[in-house]
Image (cartoon, rainbow over all chains, first blue to last red; front, side):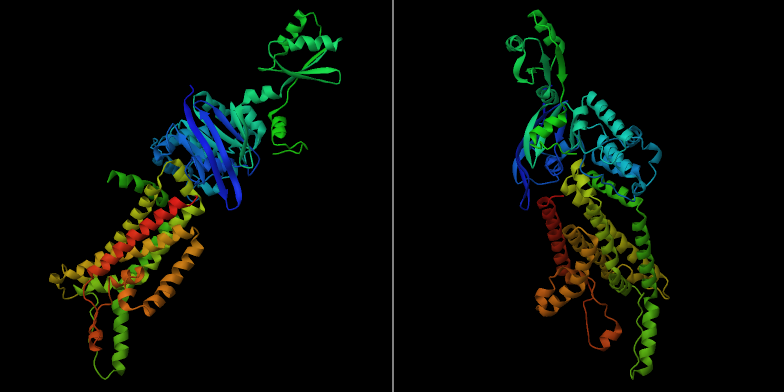
Length: 304
Length: 270
């Protein structure tokens, strides 16, 4: 299970004097749904462009499946990068046939991915007649041709309407459950939180954090406890096996635990210590608040 | 061969349903045939007009008689080679405009395979046009009365192959500019500037033994101006056969253009 799919070491890239990436290292294992999270211009697309062989790095290296990039490795990866890129004068089927050819996929696989993305009825229409949402879906269809082991999706829900977004999320979750590894770049925190198992946060070309989404969330979750005797409560929680840290604010104790927060366990423990809680509630922060913390954007202005 | 077919097949899908491409090809083929079959009439018209004023009678110039027809028609066809060169520029700059080159690279086409696909297409286009010109020559020649059947297979038949090489060199130059500039507008402008002004001036200013090594000059020299009896009258004499040296220069340029395109693609972000 711990098989390395992609290993990135110390990648750097400048566009003129603008640093797009500086010393990025990442490691992605098989089966992960890996979210690359960061505001616009944080280096997500540059990173994907480099590992897909379209952009040349100034420094650093990377390995796919334990080897330097080769054309055959790319055939095992389905990717969309930035915009949907197709021949506007060709219909969806012809556009997909070109991709299928390159990836040595069966030509009739085009029908399967067109049905999956809901474009089958429009397959004989030229790409230039498509709405942006349909173009985006065709890009996802192209990425899925031939069931690649790895899917790279750069802002896959861009330009989609709410039902389209929900469909794509469901699709990603389903593909992930079939064992594919997915790398998802997004500036939508909510999206990453909903579908990813692992996440790396980028800002201005640097990695601020990487780890599992559970880890991030447990990092942000606290349990707020209140009791008649706050000192007794404090002494008790210090001995709680899962204790990580705490602080006292406004007469309540905010407790951080090692693993995921289990309010029921805490309650049971305290009860066994002879303490009855007058207040016990979970303070669940979203990835968004964690992200804001990390990127130092405390003003609360939305990143998205 | 399998490898070649596998790089050509995507190229074929790209153009098969590309209406603009087929309209332009159709226009080109129609213009070419019209021009080739009208040359005699145009020349006759000129000679008649000139003969009226000339003290000496100017001999007739039978354009379509074997074996001269091979050189005459391939030379005339050279005037239209700008047309397929523009097609090549459109097909290549499209890949940049639509970002489809990038998409194909990240899907698993190697840069060499991509270039091989485009060069194969250019090669097929060159050979097809040369065959069309050759077929026109054959038909025109057979329609002559009397027909000189012995003149059909003649060293001058090589001019058909020379025309294919001329087109190939010319289109490869257009391809290089397309890969270099990525946008059709600027590519066409630079191409026109170079072929009609810059290289003309260079050929004019440089000594002849250097100027003839320039790519468009060398490819243009492959099929020299036919020696009409009119020319002989003025004592001008051009080569009757395609020169191996010019052919060699063209092949060298084709190789240089190919490596230059590869160099551009591996050094640049897509």
